[in-house]
Amino acid sequence: MQPSIFNPWAWRDPSALAGGYTPATPSSSPPDDPGDRRAGPDAPGPGTPVDLVGYQVEASDGRIGAIDEASDEVDAGYLVVDTGPWILGRKVLLPAGTVDRVDHQDRAVHVDLTRQEIKDAPPFDPESTDPEYRDRVGRYYADRYLPPPGEHRG
Image 1 (cartoon, one colour):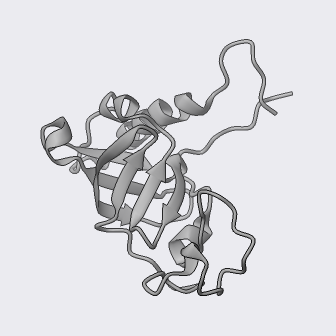
Image 2 (image 1 turned 45 degrees about the horizontal axis):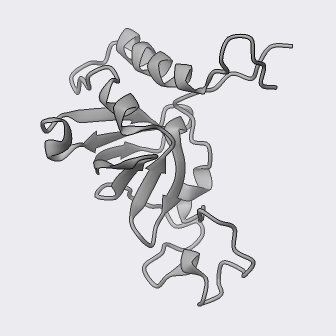
């Protein structure tokens, strides 16, 4: 059996971009309950388009920067993150598939990569429209989701 193929450019949870909520821990209360952290006064309502520009980006081991640009295209989504002084002001391109969850109340996007994995990614090239560049970036991130040799995920 062939392992499932990870598309790094596809949003895992597109509802997060349309006012959906993806909490770190499931809540037993309905999303419209005022006591529910997912539905704070500044949280977008379900179906409301969300602009992620300005949201902070959290790697699995710490903050990496803020979103400078975001695309919600189907199977072509990405974030451009300005890392500030963390890696000398470099911007990085994160495919949408790396996003684990979006916390609209805290204006934070959580990715399931380490800071080092992001730092080691191919350099961001804002001028490149070359499909080879996009393929190279996609392969770099997709490789992080493949099972180790000899292990099968199905």
